[in-house]
Length: 294
Image (cartoon, rainbow, N blue to C red; front, side):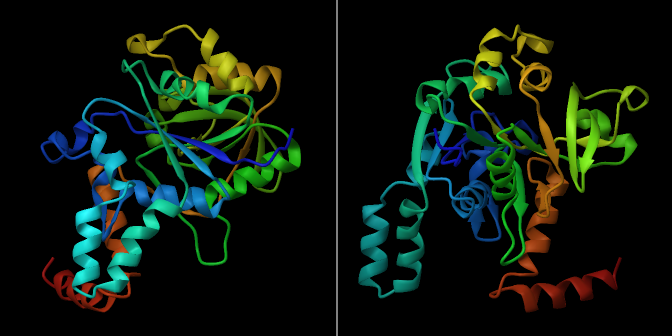
């Protein structure tokens, strides 16, 4: 069996309550960062890592996500007839990035349950998981965050996850790992604690939402009992994986934005807008002018 990672799971069934009322009818994952929906940035990260099949775990009211990656005959015809070839090519390219496979999570039972929902499609293949509100942007000619984890998995045949250092006051916002250093930017994870109190956190290394798992995680999830709020916690299954098959952590090179948070979403739009060829000069000039008034 090849260790090459060709499948990824992206849970997109959440209600996006932090962005209400905007997300009442528009999925959070389709909110734009400059001119690309949040989810498209994540799909592009998958494609850059060599992922071929992306499994979207959806819920009620999320059909717009499937439509986004489907053919839009009327739009494409209108763009073609009006001679807007560049825009037409951008729209048509959406269909060829990866194969989009959609499966519905019937009940909101937590992140672990959402990932296990994809089991019929995953089969016996190792796979990546990318959280749908975490954007990771890599510099040009640099591997994507998921690409780095895929390479580590191929090298070690061990499930691998991204970790990042956070301020002590922020550990209660994340899953935090207990680990030992095993090399530059690499750790052997012993335990994962979900949103610990700062005084109880085993480290300041947090999970920013990028993972590559062997299929053992699926059997662990199947046997994981509901925890807080009656949800199946991914961190519980990861703890079991760390104790049995092993679990590695890696700090990745990508810039990370928590686009599920209002400030993180605004930060992503500003910083990525400053790199966008169409608006960067105008935005830079505006920000400099605005800064003088603050």
